[in-house]
Picture: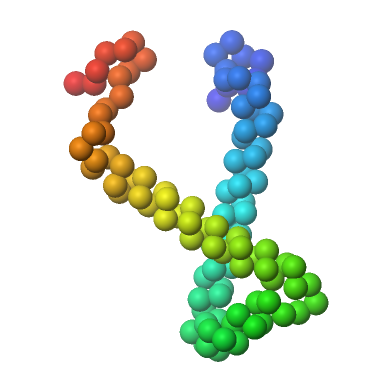
Length: 106
């Protein structure tokens, strides 16, 4: 893997800003995914009303709201990933990309 000072490496900004931001974004998505699974399990066991009340009540009400937003964000992100994986290559206007020499693939 190339490092920021290498001649073959990517841009320094990518290593310093973009990669840490992507790490934080995916960490939040994984946290929201886990919280979403817990909410679904609680809704099955206790019922949806009790689950929502428990999620939004407590000592820190802001944390409950943030966790619900992260759960919603996780659902949106995983939906977009699924559409990109399954629908993207099957679109009629999808074309394979050329290789590094500009030649189309065989």
